[in-house]
Length: 137
Image (cartoon, rainbow, N blue to C red; front, top):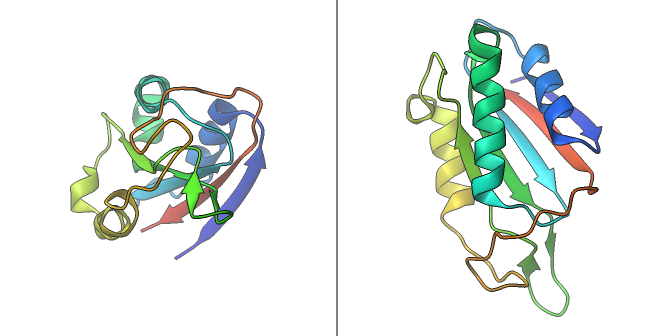
């Protein structure tokens, strides 16, 4: 499974670059890791509109996973809990992609404490850098 890592300080250009680097004939998942706090509904709106606007150029991308950097002092915590955004125009719905199922089972079910509480995903720090990894399934 080819994996590419992109490190950039702006989500939209990085995600668009990741989409173009993935093989268009196979379903893929993009993983984004951020050390900042992310607003899940706002991120979902931005990413799904970006993927929709790319149309057939992004139909091979089934979903994006957003993962927090976790810290362990004084106990395990993160700025936000992991979440995923599905591509509304994907050729393969995420639930059909085995990698999506595996990642969902291992990453999305476990919640951890965040600064605003266990369900907080409400503030977006606009200048944090993000790591983006492409996973071709």
